[in-house]
Image (cartoon, rainbow, N blue to C red; front, side, top):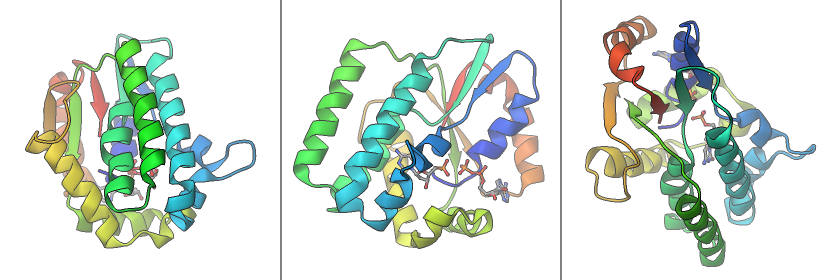
Length: 205
Ligand SMILES: Nc1ncnc2c1ncn2[C@@H]1O[C@H](COP(=O)(O)OP(=O)(O)O)[C@@H](O)[C@H]1O
Ligand SMILES: Nc1ccn([C@H]2C[C@H](O)[C@@H](COP(=O)(O)O)O2)c(=O)n1
């Protein structure tokens, strides 16, 4: 999901030795050579969706290919969720022109066919759109103030189809589902309970 506690979870595990944590490169998406493609995408998705998602694809690929510095790597999101969820959502909602979707899909297919992107485990922090909406307001990131609940509902359905129903796109790894509508204390407890499974190597979505 989006805005559901991934960074908070990674911060928790980053305190464990032998784990390398790779957060999403959001700061790059908010500032590429002085431009803010994340803000532009929310302002006018039809015009700027392709711009943001092309850059997301590049920066996520860069994250996947960066050299490993610890026995376990935990990564926030992946090149797969970028394509199967966010690009798909822009296209299906009529906010990405067909030609933009086609070009981005060609890039994605080329990358995933020619470059090995191994993922051992997907950890799905399963949150309701309402919870994400509350956390969005709490975090109060300037670019995201325009996001309506309906947007989070669409993203949620795409995630559920992919990771729970498993009816939409191929899964690059098995899925561990952690219900994540709970308060922080409860979440930390769940992270501890799942620690061994998670440390088998994971990618948070
Ligand atoms: N379990 C939780 N209960 C309540 N608030 C939370 C919880 N986890 C995270 N938050 C808050 O929600 C907001 C988004 O969390 P964050 O970890 O940045 O999400 P993400 O990385 O998925 O966007 C932050 O303000 C964070 O402090
Ligand atoms: N492919 C993507 C990935 C992320 N976003 C947006 C969604 C959020 O506004 C922001 C960061 O996500 P978070 O870590 O808070 O879940 O980036 C996108 O539009 N496309």
